[in-house]
Image (tube, rainbow, N blue to C red; front, side, top):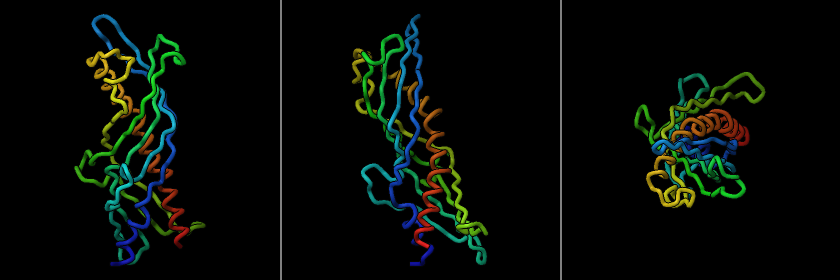
Length: 205
């Protein structure tokens, strides 16, 4: 086994546990002539660069781009990586401190929406003339995610057993996660994750 073939395992197999920003948003649902508004606070966000339970897996593969330049491209397997949040839901017309109900959120990456494969991210390592002599960049494809909550929305008391209402709010919640949280996850991979990979290489060197 060559050194380059071991690189992916050395750089991409650990859970980096990248902090994510708190987010607040609302979901509007119309029932007949009545519009109901539910507000959400998502806090304590962490992006886990590992699968749930930390199960072992193939982290990806790396190859040199040319025979002469010091440049490496790694295809990183991100399927199964996930973000976790502590959530609160409350009605817009009710005081948050009186009616806010807690739940947990897990947002898990599935296969690449464009190619259908497990590699949503490529990491490029290039030699430079800078202080550390290395530039690390990450290119992230559009992420497809699955959103799960514990307990399920249908079990939350705020919906009073109204499954149709709970399902409608969950659909709106998922859409907000796609619009608000998924960009945060991409930003974390392109910024924080690249920086951490670079630090790992500096330590190894």
